[in-house]
Image (cartoon, rainbow, N blue to C red; front, side, top):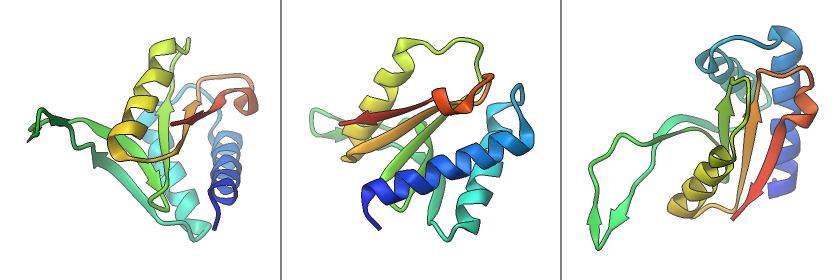
Length: 123
């Protein structure tokens, strides 16, 4: 699958999860449901993947984790917040750079319209 085809499937899965569960739940609930939905669509999903951070040639021992990695290409960062902050997009961009990935999706499930709450971020 191409990157665009994967993101299309991920967006559809996000929509289905939102339609079934609605807004206002914890991020972990959406992560579990979305991982299930993506697997149902025969997409490979890794959850809570540790982000390796190199600093001056040394691998730092950190617990930094991204929410979902789909098909080893698309990072999906989930939020369930009242207000999206600019730093969330910057955080995802940093994850993309550290993981050497090109595309990520930033999603806020605490919204009245999920379609306007999915942001594509490109490294």
